[in-house]
Length: 341
Ligand code: NAD
Ligand code: DAU
Image 1 (spheres, rainbow, N blue to C red):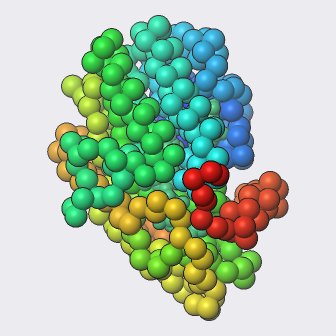
Image 2 (cartoon, rainbow, N blue to C red):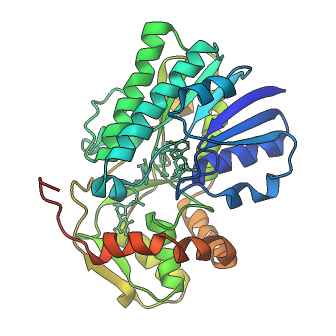
């Protein structure tokens, strides 16, 4: 049995990864999660009594904690982060702290305890705009939001731990994920849950900005492969699905699936620094590991909509809580931030 530490395992992608590993029954998994607004024990509800799962509530920035949990670990997968671009525009401090300093803490602990593999979950946001073609791993990093910049710092700090200390790191940069258990602040779950409540769907700017959409299970399958691949230490891998869609295309598809009127789409002021197009070239991952995405957007989107329709127990409490205050500030108080804040 391998001993695996997973940070951020109560979040959207981290919990998907943990469910897969526990279902396979090959690891002892230690989840370290601070349970911020985005962390949700309901995401691992079905495994709460699994004897191969240990949950430690704590902050990845806590150096002593990270030293302790990695003491007899074989590998670590680092998902924990502040992840929402819009929140980073409202207040960047937690992003710098968790995404940069938290990653430093994880890297230090992994170095001290000589882990065999450290998989750091970066993001395609680090590239900024795709340069007229999908971004490759060799393209410059030009992050456009405080979130993306914090992740770029963490990404390159990780690389430096390979070049400087020989820490066996692997870095993944995935495009936009979708699927079950994604927090309703993000585009697809926000649009689905708003539509289910007959509330307008806020479209930023023209609605023509595009993202590449990867099903969360496909992303986690890629991470499974990167965790065990040979001769990948110090390397970076894009994860994409070549499934680019605009905000408007997604909004229209959701409304159609739920038989709701198009009039629910409502233009709102654009996100400052809004990236027009994110798209990644993922041929390196395919060529080195054989990975291919399995769930197309045409199949995955209706399945995801059905999941939210069938699992109101999961998202209604989130939307009823602190999310309301966030929504008020983010959408009703929407204005362009000034240089003075
Ligand atoms: P999420 O917001 O759903 O979950 C983040 C998790 O990290 C939560 O459980 C939260 O409680 C935990 N966390 C936050 N701060 C912490 C801290 N200081 N200490 C310990 N735990 C803390 O995020 P997600 O969408 O699942 O993203 C996971 C990772 O994947 C992130 O690193 C993100 O940057 C990256 N990523 C996300 C996407 C996407 O589309 N969602 C795409 C590419 C990369
Ligand atoms: O590309 C990977 C990144 O994808 C991850 O690193 C981030 O953690 C993740 O949040 C996601 O970032 P985005 O900013 O692309 O995701 P978001 O769901 O916030 O927005 C997707 C698109 O939809 C983007 O063009 C902005 C737009 N949007 C979003 C919201 C929440 C709207 O038009 N209206 C909205 O209300």
